[in-house]
Length: 205
Image (cartoon, rainbow, N blue to C red; front, top):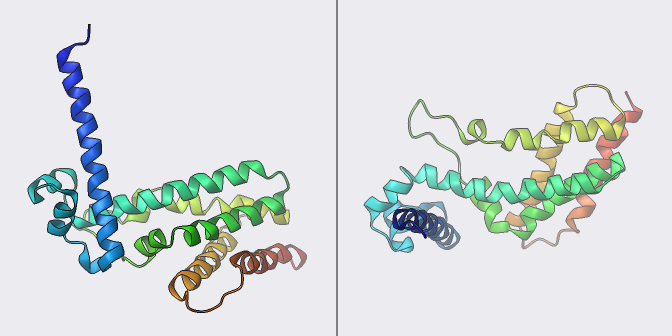
């Protein structure tokens, strides 16, 4: 026999997830339609079909909503990168494949790219940490460190090269997404040039 109170709790949790999803969907739609300027708490609440005060029960500020959207954008990216990393046996091929996956993801989801990189992070209070300090973004980015070290056969820290690679790959995504009227070459060709440059550093050490 099902306890009625257990049933109510399960239904309550399901409703909370539903409202949470509706809020993020409304925020995403507003951003796609009006950009960052359209992300007001009142507009997001209206889009989610809930009172503004109810919205504050789920997210205390616009910043918290934006950060939830960033997490929504980053999580599948890092999952794809990890999957590709596990599939490739050759170290150089692994580095190249993960780098291509990073750029390809943002090109498949340009609205997520804009959401992440065209909205500047902020703090609600001086005690708050910035998004990169409270998420696994930096750790996931720096997975390129050991990938590079293995690919070039270096027994040293390669975090500088990893940071340079992330900057270059993000630049490829940025230009392709934000200057889409230009006829760019296939992104993989740019990625290969960057990766080849890093691999060649092994020959000059």
